[in-house]
View 1: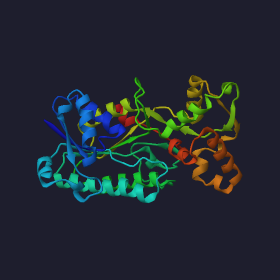
View 2: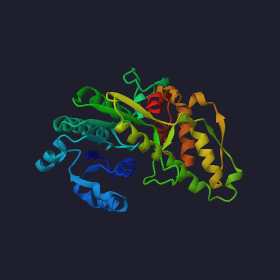
View 3: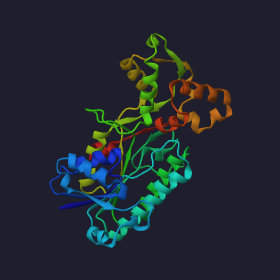
View 4: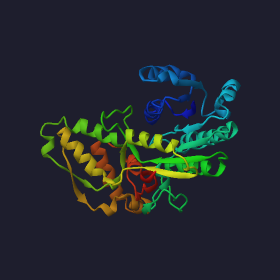
Length: 335
């Protein structure tokens, strides 16, 4: 049997990864869950072919040793794979909440993987570690002096640093871009990220004749969305390939998408108004945010926020959906 200890297994990405891993006939999967989430995990396992090989392990990312009982620690000693997906992905959360989950939680996972003598620690990071780096960000890059514009960016960077510097067992890092629903079914379980656009469309599309009244707004920059099935298929392959320890892998779309193009494609399907550009993109792109240009131009910031408010999109979402970097995925495609 191949054994796994998974954190974040009841989340969106985690749920899909469990479904993918359990297809392996020798997979024996242990999922760290709080006591209150056991029933949810067991219900998901019952719906999943092979789910009898998905086992809850009571614990807490916020507790020393992840709160594991001594018997569980003994049973998991020498576990083949520790897969750490648990993270806080709340674009409006402050520094302390992000730090407790993303940094301190990762520190405890690293400590446990080391203590268990795990075969490999697999850490799900994010392309957010690139911050506002302008240009091509490769899988080999990490500490490039980039500005990290939000608590989420900063804590995901710090978490990856911990994995790189404090893990004594083999490790691998996975950096997904903006993960969206399954490419075939569209399955999601939470409205956030690009799905704020759907909430906007739901309201605007109900207005009679709305599709004949285009909105005028700025170019909000380029995003990078990738379907969850691609992410878990790539992770499954990279988790089990030989000779990849000590490396990072980008799980991204090969071509960035302009955020307003994504919106307009959805708007066309929903019968909602499209956006036409009326303000120069240099004033609103992620590079401009990184340089604090908009902070020196409060009128322009107000114009951007007013435009987003018309769409029902919180302004703080934009730095999490748009990137100054383009992300190479040469290693991911090669392996």
